Image 1 (cartoon, one colour):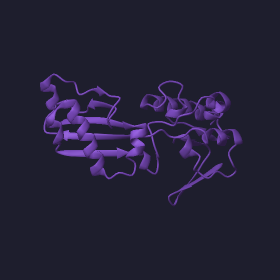
Image 2 (cartoon, one colour):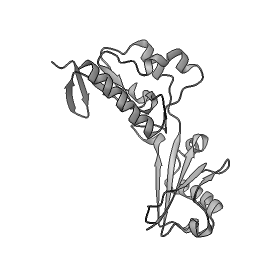
Image 3 (cartoon, one colour):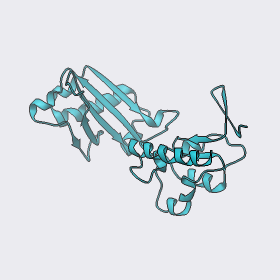
Image 4 (cartoon, rainbow, N blue to C red):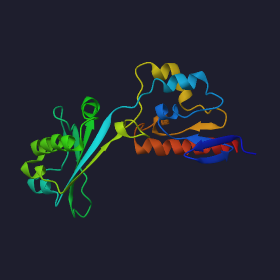
Length: 209
């Protein structure tokens, strides 16, 4: 019969195995009965989310290309630390995507979207010229403010955390298995790492079924 009962959002599921694939600090907010081992809980107490936001300005065309620019910037000043050309392959419109990270992301957590947009476009004008001041639309994602991420792009450990608590990162607790990009040994923090973690945990589950 089923060994585990999982309840969330009014839905209850019973299962022989459970895969938890959310960042460690969010996995720690799940209520477990019985309690998780101390080693696992001590680990998740020490893996906070970093801080990141993404701002995308949409234009009629990728105008920067005509100026010989590829849309990529790395900067140690301003609000946007790096940008990428996110336009579609057919260039039917232009899209500049920029990351707001760390101290800058936290500084704008409580700001209005209009305030963030103004600061972002100021940087885009610096990088790409006056045309960048007038996007047709603007998209902002602040993961610090999202209920099921509370930051990004990844959960991070201070020096010594993994050497002292690391074994609990991937070790199953009974029939509870841990996945997610934070558990990957390659490309941790990226989609590549998330896929690798899924492949690993699938093998773990299949090995004991």
